[in-house]
Length: 337
Ligand code: TYM
Image (cartoon, rainbow, N blue to C red; front, side, top):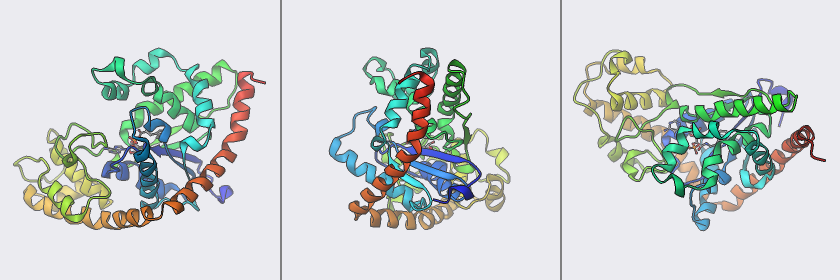
């Protein structure tokens, strides 16, 4: 990798291999990762250690890890221009997470809304891993002293915690070892919502498949999901300000805008006065056209698991080489001998 030329900084990001990679992952994350990889030194991780904070069937997890890696590559992440690997292959993530478990405060973790959402009413039955998940996420990022983290809007609170941990570590140990990492939350695709409820984000874990557009859905499935997506009876307004209080309409316009690299205002201007029956037909065409090459490439890559495994192995070696001196520096700061 030509590190010297990539002066904008170092990017780290990841996604959980828990199945059902969807349009939210693509627009909020994967597509942006591909766009950043020439400007930034880029490290993209399949976070399998995060995935097991909720139960994963071991035989399926293996395929899900490969599926996630295939989704990254099909979205344009190039393993010769970025580092692509799975988290459990680099032991430094777990080692640094332990140190951060001792830096982060209980009160900080108690404020994490994602834990509250995921644990639900059954908090006592949630794994301890799910609770301390944000400390592992901070470790992922800071193990490489990443300066920028491209994510969807839902990860913002976790990134604020990462900065709090970095700051407290630096203060407690009297060092400036960790950077204050910046989130990169990019464009109209940063918050893709459920097709059935515009107040909920599109998510892998939502039981109904009709709520999301999966990266491996075929054209008929996509058309059916978009046709049945919830909307309202009003036509499209001439500007996006008038979409306020119409969450489902806002979401569909946002998806169209993100896929076409436009903003919501210009989509509204183009479709002003037309009903959602019409707009959904145009949206289907855009979604099918933009996703077909990704779906095809994912399928092609997944037919060759040995290739995916070799990419991950090579990536893990390169990631370890970056992490080792940083971890050694951290251990010295903590006082380990
Ligand atoms: P995960 O696996 O839930 O999602 C992966 C990426 O996709 C983005 N995303 C979305 N963006 C827009 N609209 C949506 N509906 C949507 N759903 C998901 C997420 O914001 C994310 O960028 N905790 C992380 C994984 C992680 C990580 C990290 C990320 C672990 N360590 C270090 C960055 C840096 C997660 O669960 O993402």
